[in-house]
Image 1 (cartoon, rainbow, N blue to C red):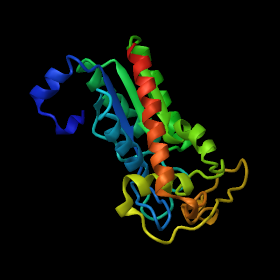
Image 2: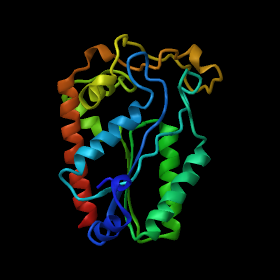
Image 3: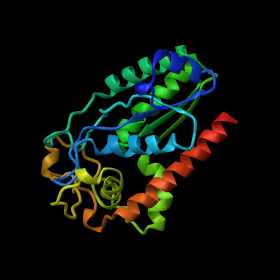
Length: 236
């Protein structure tokens, strides 16, 4: 159930039966010349919308913004600071907990390592105060690793490349533009640099030219099966 579409009375009645809630998180960041800035939000949120056709869970209104480190200097990227993201999530978790929820899935369409670290730290912090709560925290790339291997998609493809472009081709085909090309960043190892655009100016990390509708469909089907299994395990 999409919480944003429910009335207060519908929410009240459904919450007597549904005890699991998914919080989708994305990002607004550069995804090359061919994908929308909200790619990371669209991928995970659209999967969630398909998921609730098969499983009874609540889907919270999504958080569009995330922490974007490497793409921050690029046009269109709007990044949250880590502490802002953590405090926002803690506030939302507290409110949903007050409404009676104890099973939380925090699913991120944005796979930035620093971004995910803050989300995991948020869950850890909340657990210190509410020990009976259950959490499942993952980003879309982690969830897709097995199927990406099956589809023979390179491990070096991670952003606006083959798999992400395939997902948008399937979920939001009208938003895919021409102009995608193969590219990879060249950040110096172990260094934290200021002028990140010197090392990664395109916002592409992979090869979008290999993307297809069929690959996107296969990934979405796999994600739904994974999430159905994880929800069933948590609720049991």
